[in-house]
Image 1 (cartoon, rainbow, N blue to C red):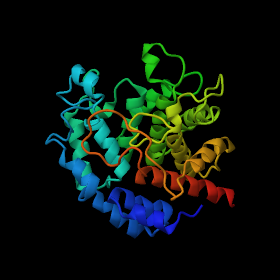
Image 2: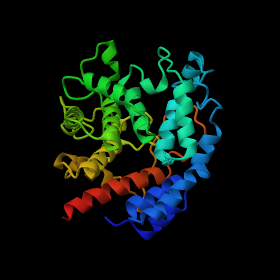
Image 3: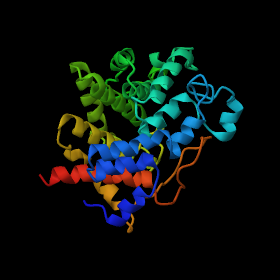
Image 4: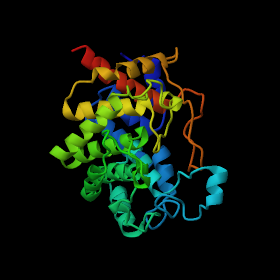
Length: 324
């Protein structure tokens, strides 16, 4: 699939966080070109805006998972807040802040010294108890050059018998969830790319991948019905939530990292992705998570540059393999 020039132009008329990924992933631009654009994330647009909200101690909103002043009453009224440290780091990763920059290194150091998890005061880079949170902490740690191997060891020990993971394991759950599984899979892949794979991480990823593939990325294994209709809707940022496009993006990243061909069981999800493309070549933002954010990037119901970028690079990967 070759995206039309008008769609590419529309994507490029955007934020540096999107432009550099369009250059690298859709246009196969020379590294010097997309790296130069990527460097602007720190000083322009959404990346600079997010960094402007950082606290002097390296955190955001004074907390690891929740803002320091966010009460249960506020949660019930406004929804979960997405302004604290873990979600801000996740967005900086998604924006592509250069992990070798002085700003990134200073941030990582300050968070390590000052941030503690709400659960039981654990140091930030030690992780906490939930698989979803720990999976995303591994992603950020691997990206920003932190040794997160103890968290990885913990996640490897927490895999469910059906192959995936579930944040409710500590409350007695014996079944995996799409949400927890994708967070851990992304974390394990990021860890392998940063420091190398082991037999244990490969086996765990294979089991988690089979969990998703056996379900076609969105179906219940028992009935074949969609496990959640929202899995077929486009969401961005995903935060901790799963949807089928996030699943496809993981399998694209894993394929590019390992050289493995796309699994045929992804075909139905690919067909659904193609079917949702608008006549103008874009994809919409179907919904967003409730709760305070530092700033809005896109409007629900409108064409989404983020979703369109993600969809186009998945289809480019899929079609390039199909043409071999």
